[in-house]
Image: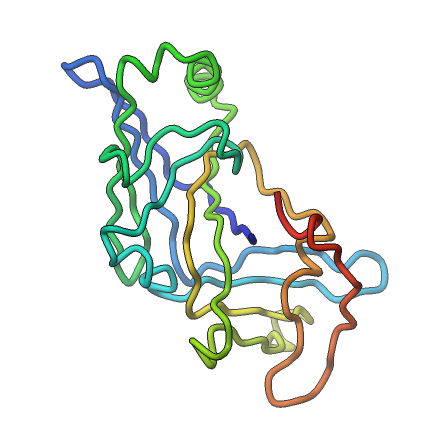
Length: 204
């Protein structure tokens, strides 16, 4: 599974019932730098296009989770549990989660709330997979950056299968994850060699 990152505009409020309401948004069409290219390589950027996550988001029966740090062992809410709602629009995917008083008593949730209040967790990272080409012929596209702006390769994702949203401290793009993405420029041209990536190393 792959991931992207944004500051998320996260907001946490206490309700009269004692539950916590957590809201956030992941903006579309915003370039994220996955790699600066190092000393000799080219920078690599990624853009999630408008409503790229729409397929699973628009099917209410498809369960999507809200996690801490991409860990399914540390869930905060989910659509299946009725504690996570999602709204897709051209500009962003927004969510609202309810963290009950019972969940607030769980140790890892207490740790998350303390870290959030301290300003240590401010990022939102969606975990997703690219659909097979037989299902979506052009789910992604790689182009070269305008030379007047830089020399990066820009990967645009038009369709992705969203499985979870995670609250994180900062973006984390290990080299194995960057290499797991496709970096072949559409229509021929430069091809970035892809190192073999063991299946276990592709994502958490």
